[in-house]
Amino acid sequence: MAKFYKKLTPELREFIARQHLFFTATAAGEGRINLSPKGMDAFRCLDDDSVAYLDVTGSGNETAAHLRADGRITIMFCSFETQPLILRLYGRGRVVRTHDHAWEHSAPHFPALAGARQIMVVNIESLQTSCGYGVPRYDYTGERETLLSWAENKGPQGIKQYWREKNLISIDGLPTHLQD
Image 1 (cartoon, helix red, strand yellow):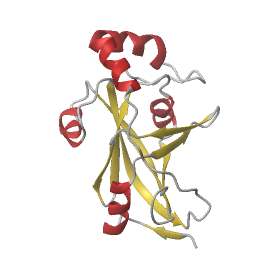
Image 2: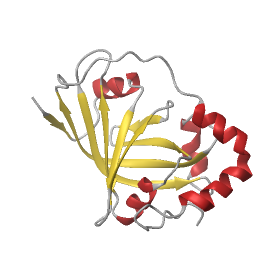
Image 3: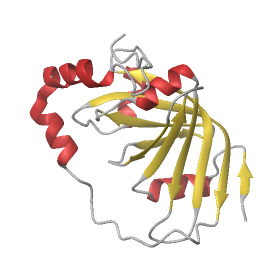
Image 4: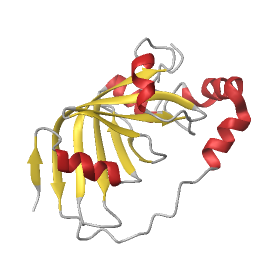
């Protein structure tokens, strides 16, 4: 049932574009594995070999710390509404921060969201599809506004202060380099 690919196909790109939710998984050599759900129209296929997503300020910054320490990342999409399918993208990632030169090139691919802190760029090494027959059906009813409202209320200076307090070190003590 599982099928491996070396690159994104037009059909897989279309599948990704229809999804409202994706998951990222990363780990360093030691410590916890991080698995995070993501949404907010923040994922883009850059070409057949690379993808990226806009990372908005949250309670932690594990993915950035893990990418800096190890580089490995898996992204998973599950179809909850239509065709049963699971798609995993396996690759190596890097972080583009708001103050990096590459931000000017990368940011226009995404909506301008309050609290945007970095873009995760992934070079795909392989992809895998599987059936998804065991994934339940759910109806998408919309995005939650809570995180964006929180970031808007904090304002740019409040977000930077929050980064200093909560986003510079991972839960396992790894640096995230958010403000380097």
